[in-house]
Image 1 (cartoon, rainbow, N blue to C red):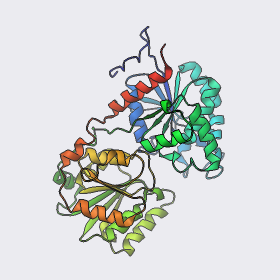
Image 2: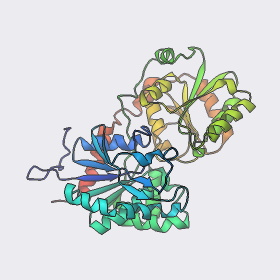
Image 3: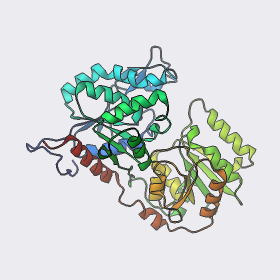
Image 4: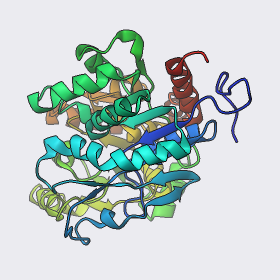
Length: 406
């Protein structure tokens, strides 16, 4: 067991907090990188107090297991020492998405009631406002267990939509605590009516086991990359909100040969990958853009160390882990002004921040960053000490306050 947070033990010596965490985005044997930032936080917390995870599995009669392979996940597994449960809930694939939280609630009621009788958690910990936060708000109030919601990026495109807003307000205002991974989403919580004393900003951490500074020459040699090339790395799945096309457009207008390496999984039928490759070819840089697909953390770290600059062109984010990871590797970042970026990147010192969707500004920032020398140690120091263990301590302090004196 790791070090105890003051107050995390009862007077009788037993654990004061027993946490049941919920996350619909979580690593599994089918997608080991999905929601890995959630796992990192929960794993760090679990070294201090009892914690289990609920990663619900969507189910539909006759579900095509080739298209929806998550349907065959085991009922329970161990992931990096953390117990993970996979109860099923009914849902319509690609339809009635506004009802996902209610189906989640209905599907877990009986299983959760039985599990709580056996395991006896005293705090529910929901990650993502939708569908987890809303569903957990129903479940927790029915079982009379306090709950917290951690805001991650999914609230941003939903909180202004009428079909989601009322339910988000209900879930957030009844939560004992709301944790946001950036200040902007904390402001959204306040706008939706959550009292300020119940809102806490706790950014993500970084796993120094993987993300640490290595000599750039060494990283490039391991990856078989040219020592003389200028290299830009963009990490993120190929979904539209990551806006990889903006990076390709910017690259096409840079002076001199610059290589772009895109690291991230394909989505759906691979049409986005085909479109991005075609765009690169149309702009005359098809031979300078490489798509690696999904990569494990140790390989992502190697690419970040090999890069001259890391770029994030997203349309919206929560606390983008790739920014923290790039900085931990000593690599400057050019990122759009989304989520926690302005809390992480110091313009002129550790990278540059550009307006969302401004391709000209993105190009100019990349050009400027590539044209100068950066102190990799200064870049690394900007996130030094932001370990997941530090995050766990901050989270548990909030949870202790949530439960109050015993």
